[in-house]
Image (cartoon, rainbow, N blue to C red; front, side, top):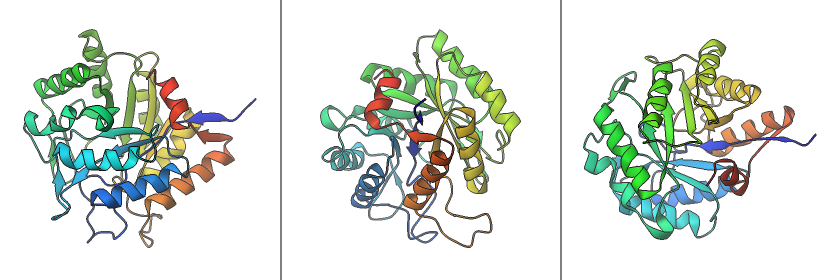
Length: 278
């Protein structure tokens, strides 16, 4: 029997990390492109992109910044699956959150993030009203951009099924299970098992852990037959003692090494496109 495959999804930047917290987080379009091209050569399947204002390091929504990043990646890696963020943690307006969905042609993203409910993080909230979620899902469907469904607890999976019944999400779904947030599902086997059991039929899923739980959740996901989400967006450290700052490359290489020991390897982007029905 051949090696089993999984989706390796990397979130290299996110909203929170800055150069002050870690020098390793890529911020400018050029830094992000170089980082992604390096990670692609190491076996990454999919990338979850956040844009930053290159002058201030602050999160940005403008499609022009995303276009620069996507063009830089696709000029070298045409098959790599690219997801852009429509996060509500900083920008509450639909016009800003959906701006990136207007990209066309060579810089149109494959996926866009869709968080299915409002939730609290340690110091702030991500606001996702039913009207906002449905409007974003509708826009993604109109633009033929797949939703990367972000779920932080069991109720969000139920809401995904509700949106499928309304025709705003179509199978096969791709979902990221994000565990370990202080106000959401925790990073343990029971929480993950319940969420996986309730996934819509035929779903493809990955799991990521916030902070110290990242490695634990990644390994649980591999053992359970899922994919993984890894990267500096969710975790800055190589160890629980927080004595060694991580790089995206180190996090990816460690994960692939563990996967290989389990008889697993990442899908190539082309293989994953077939699995995802793209």
